[in-house]
Image (cartoon, rainbow, N blue to C red; front, side, top):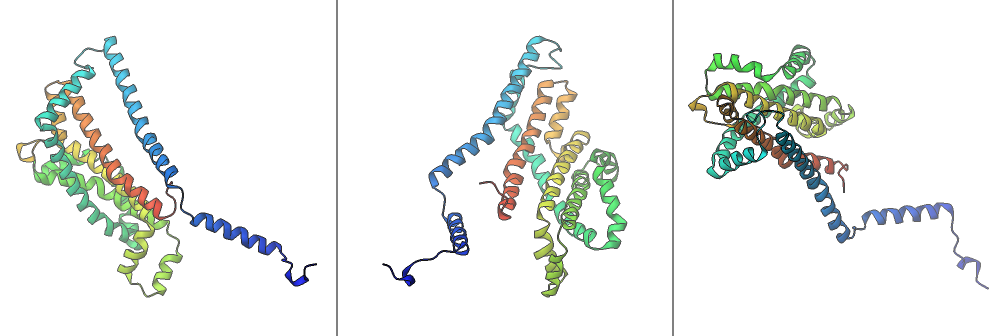
Length: 300
């Protein structure tokens, strides 16, 4: 007969501790790499196939409408004609030139806009007097169509690059600043207090506490700011054209309108859309996923 002290006794607490340890071990155990590879392919297919199917359906509907002859050819060209126009511009190198002229101008203006809007957003968010003074003005400027600034900018600077950058900045700065203000407003008040208690000054608080904590709202403002700046630039390029400015996508679109060449017009619209989608997929989507993953919100 076994001795009493050799009998193992269990209690609910020990069972609970064992279950917790097993759960933590399961979390720490790396997943099987093979299923993860399959999941990656599934995610890739789920991300790529739906847009391709949607594009194929849109082209099919377009072809059907063209074949029905409900509109004349100069209003609704055949998809093949637009494709040939795009192919000619791509093979000749003109499409790349148009995209480079517009995109490099938009990127420079956008980066300058970030440099202006970030400290402005911090001031509006943290200084009550500045918020009362220019906070409503920023909201009003954000809702103002940027194309309204083009005539004024032309009268101020003439048909020069300064006009383009002025319209671009007026389009993106309010959105970026308001996005940062919204992100800072959602920060728990305890975080800046902890930083102050640890001896952080205003610059250190802004750099190490406010900006990282407000990053989701700030990124949303950046995305909206880029969209507004890109729209503003296209409007400016359509209205203000000159050899000094070069020929960007907006000028290419306006040239098709002047010639009543609908394939050129649709090809220009497709290139403008391609740039917008490309920036979203190559720049903002990875940034957003990285921020979510860093906060434990990313999908596996």
